[in-house]
Length: 370
Image 1 (cartoon, rainbow, N blue to C red):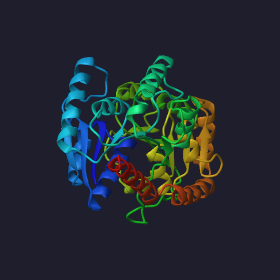
Image 2 (cartoon, rainbow, N blue to C red):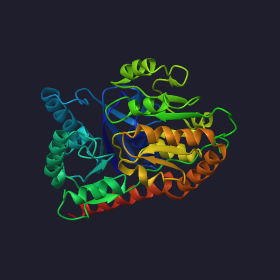
Image 3 (tube, rainbow, N blue to C red):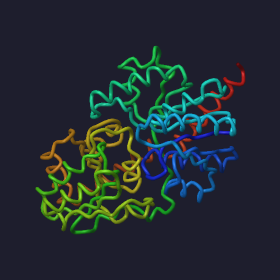
Image 4 (cartoon, one colour):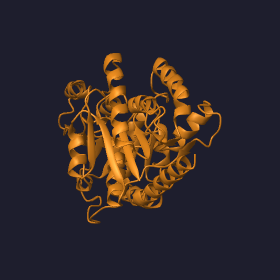
């Protein structure tokens, strides 16, 4: 099969990027012809190229809305798709989801839109939710299948009657590959446990609540990986709260499995989510997880089983649960062991890959029969 991926940004590395990279690399290794169309020529573009994936860098595709550049991006995407002439297009991220489906009109190949968290989910402003829901409603007829990475997102779309029937929207949970080295599991021997949070610094993530919670806990150590629009503001808040000895800002880089061996717990405090891959990576390493109860996080983290789920923006409960986990090594070990088991049962890459490959074959064959 000839498969084209479309994703908006190359200047950052989020869960959707990891998802696209893993699928593209595996498909290429299995003999399929794969190309990734991506906005700009940043760090993620470099990672794809080093992984042997063909990349088409798009000059005009940008994250922020700009009618002039968006019109040029639409023409640019359509031109590239005509050149590639794929058997199937699979789109990731909201902006690409809009432009990619419009650009594909009358190009006669099936189009999959993978939802890594709806832009009309709870936590996003009312106006933005309304606009994106209307856009998605308009674009449904241009979509062969909508793949949600969590049951939460699928149920949200069905409850809001995004489509007339349920068959067009399916769930395929995110999955990641097993550890290359099983020695890269969490080590719980540290007397002062370090916690990790991998997240962009933007409106989706709630570093602010985490910082105010950390202020209430002595000896809590947190490392933050990521960059983004609110990075400097959060650094200033950390300094203002006198968290210099507790919170470290490590910047953005591609996280490999060895990183998790340095930590005894994982944190993801958010305003909204799809199905976070960073939580799955932490579970693979055998880490307990403290996460906001938003989006599909409840499909990964089971409260009191492999970690704690926190209601959104609840600073006192964040502090309470992090304090409990930081003081109790046996709890960390118990939760971490269960995290590892849940990863093996639900979130290994092979299961996800087989589901996507079955879907690709189904849609390509259906299209050939028309």
